[in-house]
Image 1 (cartoon, rainbow, N blue to C red):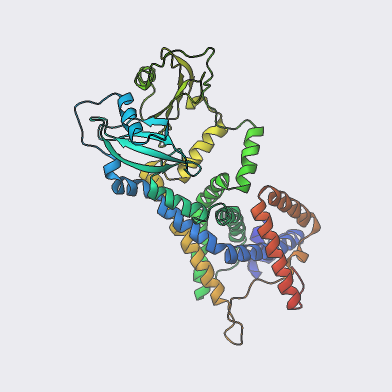
Image 2: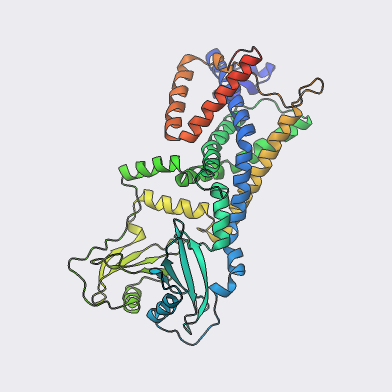
Length: 445
C-alpha cells in the first residue's frame, strides 16, 4: 500500500486496512515539506517560468513568421535552370569583400534562394553574414545577419535571445537557467502532492486547486522534457552536462577532414556537390570549404525535421573524391537523443504538430502559474494588516525521520553542486526563510 494513500482515507475506511503507523508518519512528515517546497518555488520562480513560457511560445512559430517577413530574401521566382554554385558564391563575395565564405546552402526547392554564409570582422559570436542569391540568375536578393547552425534570421534570432537571456547577454542567462533548474523540481513535487492528495474541497480555492492539479499532471511529462533539454543550453549546468557527455563519449561525432597528402588543384563546390549528390546525400545541405590547408570539404545535411537527416561527407578538393562518410544512423544513442531533444524543444522535429504541442504546453504552464498565484491570494487573511497569502506551516522538516531526511539532503546537495543555479537559489530561499522565521520568532523550517 502506498504511503500516499494514507491521507486519502476517511475515518470509516481507515479502521479497516489502516496503513502501518510508520508509513503514515513518513508521509505526514514529508507532505508538508513538499508542499512548502512547491509553494516557495512556485511563488518565487513562477515569474521566470512565466516569461520563459511566453517567450518560448513566441519562438515556436518563428519559422513561419520569418518565411513571410523575409520572403524577398528567402524565395525567388521559379526558373528553367541555374547558374553554377561557384558563380553564385563569387557574386556574393563581390558584395562582401571583407568576408570569408564558411558555407554555401543551395536552395532545396526551385523557388528557394541560395544562402552564401560568411565570417566577417565585427560579428558577435555565433553570428554570420549571409548573402541570398537567386540560383537561376546569380542576382543578389539581399543580405542579413544570421545566427547559429540553424541560420536563424534577425527576427527569430532576436526572439531566441529574448527567450534565452532577455537580451541581456550572459547576465540574462541566469533567468532561463533558473527557470529550467526549478521547473523539474516544481513538477515532481506537484506530482507527489497529487499522489498524496487529500479529500477535495468544493470551495472556490478547491476548484482552482483541482484545475491546477489536473492541468499540471496533463503537461508534466512535457515540462520535464523542456526542463531537461533547456538545461543543456544553460551556461553553468550546460557546462556540466557537456563535460559529462565528453567523459561518457556521448558527444556528437563529426566526419574526419584531415587529408593524407597536401591537396592540389581545387575542383570547386559544384564538383563537390555533384559527388555527394551521386553518393546519395540529399538536400538540404551546407557545403563548407576546407577550414585549412590539408583539410577536406564537408557537405552536411541540415534538415531538422523527422526523419532526421544529418549525414555528412568529406570530399578531397583535389579530384572530388569522397574521403569519409558519417551517417546519422551511426551516431550513438545519446547523440541521437541530444539531436532529437534539441530539435523537438525548438519545435522543428515534427513540424506543425511539434509546434502545436509546445503551444499547448506553454498555455498550460501559464494557466497553472495563474491558478497557483490565485490560490495563494485566496489564502490571505481577510482582516488585519497582512495582505498576502499565507505560506504552508513552518518547521516541517522536524517531522521527517532521519533515515528519510538524510538521503534527501545528500541528494539535494549533489544536485545543487551539478546544477549550481538551483543550488544557490535554494540556499537563498533557505536563508530568507530563516531570517523571516527569526524576525517572527518562529521555529525555523
